[in-house]
Image (cartoon, rainbow, N blue to C red; front, side, top):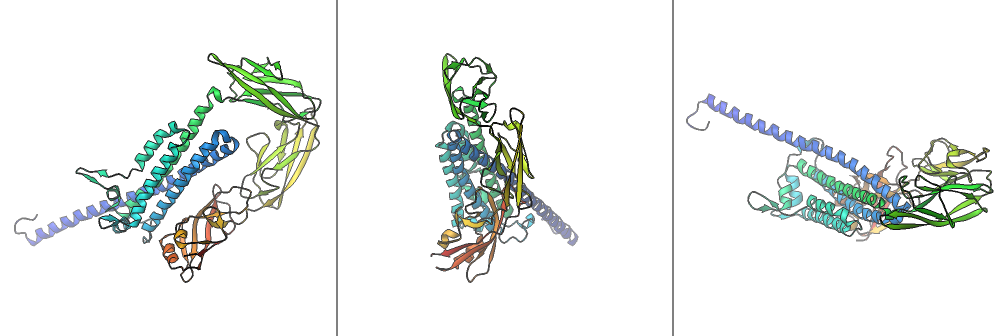
Amino acid sequence: MAGGKLSPRQKMINLMYLVFIAMLAMNMSKQVLSAFGFMNEKLTESNVSADNKNGATYASLATKASDQPDKFSHLNKEAKNVQALSQDFNAFIETMKEELTTKVEDKNNYESMDGTDAGDAYFFKGEKYTEKGTAFLDKINNYRTKVADVLAKAQKKKEFAGIISSMKTRFDTSDQKLAEGTQPWLKNRYEGFPLITTVTNLSQIQADIKTTEAEMLSAMVQGQLESDVSMSNYTTILIPEAPATLQGANFKGKIVLGRYDASLKPSKVIVNGKEITNIKDGGAILEFPAGNVGENAIKGEFIFKEGDSLIRLPIETKYAVVAKPNSAVISADKMNVVYRGVQNPITISMPGVPDNAITANAPGLRKASGLGKYVMSPGKGKTVKINVTGKLPDGTPVTSGQTFRIKSIPAPMAAIRGNQWGTIKMPKTSLQKMTISALIPDFEFDLKINVSGFSVKVPGSPTVIVKGKRFNAAAIRALGKARKGDMVTIFDVKASLVGNSGYYLKKVGGLNVQITN
């Protein structure tokens, strides 16, 4: 095509070929850009799902730590440390994505995000890194090191060894091997790449964070399950046939070991100085005179063989003997009111009446797991009445009821550092790094509130609207103009309940920050 003297017609044909080839290349480039954009969408959706699953596991672990501190408190503490590091790193990455795309008018038009200037200017300054590029590298290395330290010092080191290895590989920032020589990791992954690929890479890092959390939580649960099945972890449990025993009646119940293992047959059970021979489903069946009204002790030991050894587990518990009741006992686990928008735990019982002989009814009330446990989700109105009916052992019915006030969840307050709200003082260099949250001061429930945006007003500057939980580039620029003594206002916070986003929260109160320097 380039040799010899060409006719005008041949020149035109050659030119058309060049244009055609260029169009093919351009079309392929646009398709690749769109593919990265669609991949980023999937990663973002997956990250939200993973965040929800991890959040539920964190909450479950915290509940277990409260219920069984000896078994789960150390796991919960380790998990919280990793969770805090992960949330901070994830928020840092989210801020980077916002800053990189701040000039993109339509963030769904992936084909328009083909330029490399935004990413190169963000990370590189000549052959060196910018402050933000260095901060990005430091953040990755800091996360990798600190999470590894937490897991390495944890009680379950064996379960975490593989996770530490995978996590170090996942967040490795060492020089990358090329066909000839090596190249710094940041240049290898981010220099000269279209903006949409850079954003997708950052979303993948967020996915890696959530994968690390999920692997850690899974190892914690699995490790504890393996520990639970060990014979050394069995304990004696007294299960009375009824929550309480009426005066003059015989106490009925049984003592079992830990996991309710029907195949486990004890060698001998001694209770209050007498051997119990009635053993059924791994439990010792008890029946003896209840005794006086009040607390009565049961002492003895559970003996079984493990190999050539005898394992002796002490029995030391109490049971209550009460007079015949004439009314129900109803209590709200949190306070004497119930709130809309949350699951209010309610305990309902009747002394001397087994749980399966008690029925309770009220709008929004449902049975929960556990003896006497219910959950109330109140609807409209100012009050709700719970009606209870119980049947005594002799068949006599007893009815009772109690009215509870219904309140809406109080208005949240904008906050930083998790617990600072109202009017506070702070340097502007510190404020611009803060994560904006929302809390309800002195509220009985530990509600989790998600913040998706807020507005910032700096004296002398227009109001800046921010999406997310941290100051964006525009807000940081406005904050830079603030002077000592200026009162910066954070208001119009967009918030929703985690796990119940459909509930309409009251308007979030603003946060006033007086700049100290």
